[in-house]
Image (cartoon, rainbow, N blue to C red; front, side, top):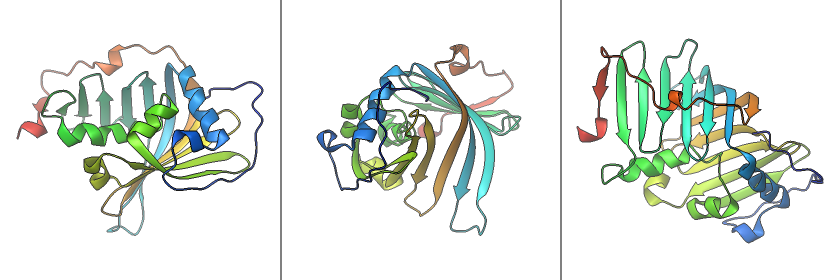
Length: 225
């Protein structure tokens, strides 16, 4: 997200606190949040690192992500894609091309439940405003150095917090592009995405957010089982 703010003076100040509200935001964090209003679409390559207590070495994979405001995503993991996750307005689709399988998760109605809260955690790197961020998270820590801003967030939703106690966001202080997100899970594992080759506001076809599923794929609704 290379949203530029003209005339914004960069500083190397470091600021840390606990459970801050929007009025206490670090100025550079506030500037990053302000820049989010310029984002209509975004795409980037990423390297994903999964760290598990049971493994001595982390698992790594590469992929590509597309975002269209306010909340549409498409994640493709692997080349060619081994897993595709598509978030539209009212559902999340997880597609496994090699297995010819698709899992469907509703995001509306009573069935969504805590799953919708958990999915919202994956969107933490794309807040639309300081008010939106404050409504969903407590800010445990804010830091800035010469080039990078860092936020540590805790979900306010109890069900989401039980699954994912903390989220870390890193962004570039020069152009306010998203550098990385780290999801810390309750079992001690973590999932980090490092972004590169980001493009701000590219023309994005809406069709990839509503993919056609081949007739020979098995479609599963895990929440109804």
